[in-house]
Amino acid sequence: MKKASLVNDLQYNENKPAVQVLLDTDTSREIRIAMRKGHVMKEHKTPYPIVVEIFEGEISFGVHGESYKLKKGDLVYLEGNVPHDLKAEQDSTVRLTLTKADTAERVKEVADNS
Image 1 (cartoon, rainbow, N blue to C red):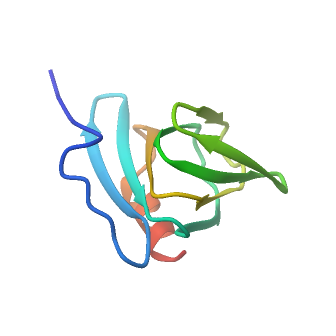
Image 2: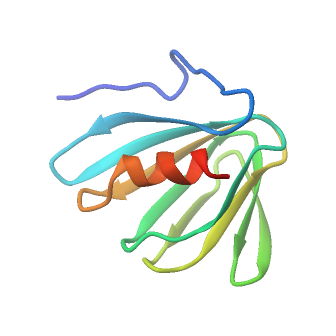
C-alpha cells in the first residue's frame, strides 16, 4: 500500500505552479499542481492520455481554442497529443494522473516555462 495526501504539506511557488509527485505506482503517477490565482501553464501536450481533477479552486482549461471553467470536483480526460493550457482563476489544487510511460519531469518543465 502507498499513501499520499492532496492537502498535507501543500506549498505554492510565488511565480509559477508548484509540481509535486504524490504517488509513483506500477501503472501511474499521481501529481499535485498547486497554482496561485493568475498562475498559467502555457499550451502544451503530452504523448499519453491524462486525467485532470480540480481538487480545490477553479481553473480555465483551454482545449481546441475553447476555454472551459473547471471547478472543485470536476474531472477531465484528455487523449494524448491534444494541446491544452491552464490558468488558475483562484488559488487551486489540481490532481494530474499520468500513465507510467509519462514523466513528472515533463510536467515540471511545462510549469517552469510558463
